[in-house]
Length: 240
Length: 58
Image 1: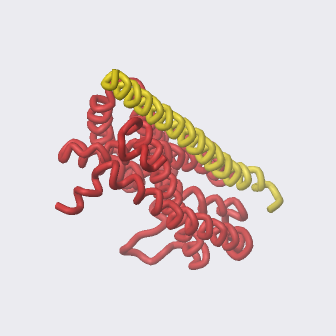
Image 2: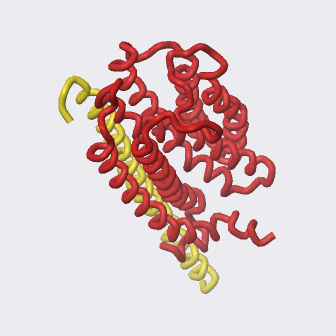
């Protein structure tokens, strides 16, 4: 199949290099637009005052942390099924950015929780399951670093990522399944939005910025991983 | 942005900016190390090739 041609690190390495600016530049532009709208255009919330502006990074970070984990687990599944080396490298490239977004979601959530709930942290279902997500990311990276044989490390991490993916629907539905301090879903495909359109559009712009940033950074990290693993190969020396 | 919520807002945006800065810096460092490693491997391969040619010639 022609698509498998691009599953080879040698084929994907130059493509990744060409793709990075196509995601990095929109990420920067969308962030600037989002910050402009979020700080200068969106009005003050009548209930929460200025603190609600944390939503413009909290929600994109939380969504990205969950989605990046599912993408990472998808690449891990692909690596187990098709035994493609690039799939494992993709999963490894996504993990640090996913962990960063999980940490940001927890941090911004704590800073938003203090003025709105009166506390930085509660052992609530949504918060605890997001903390577990961060530990899963850290565990994935630590496990890979702990095993010397790269192939064995890839397989072990793939199994861990696939088992851990059960946590993502738990995070998403936690506010429905349990009584939690955390509010319900801000945006739903089936219901009308619960926030003003300028706030919603600013949040969605920041979501797209997070997407583009994650793709750009993951591709850049993937190139480094390929260069580390393929050092000494003929095709890589032609790119140096 | 002023008032009682400034700490929480700037604490959030500042943490994101710091996290992105650290991630981009570590990416740059990793890329540098990977390229140096690959270049050394290339030079080692070249040296091995030239010594093999010398042995064949000898």
